[in-house]
Image 1 (spheres, rainbow, N blue to C red):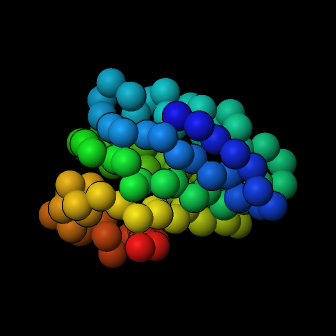
Image 2 (image 1 turned 30 degrees about the vertical axis):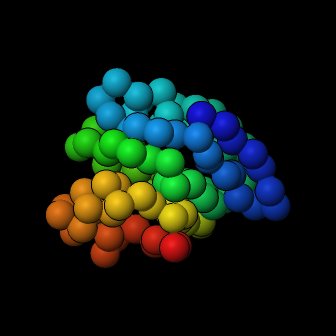
Image 3 (image 1 turned 45 degrees about the horizontal axis):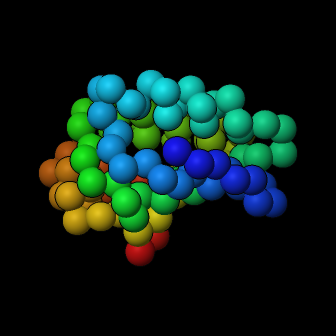
Length: 99
């Protein structure tokens, strides 16, 4: 996982799977790196090949964290497998998805 700060947004890249084994670490790292002045989170899902219920929980936690700061979470270019999980759980209606 790699993070980069640009303006008021934390960009998260390089996450290939968001599962029970990795979700807590990703969520904790985002929380740690979301410093003052950063309100939004852009999560690059273009390499996200596997997403389970723990991963969905991590995304929801990140969204709540951003909303508490007056910002938002955006999922950027989710892969077909990630899109399928989001659609099956109807979370594609909850998250802002940018193709």
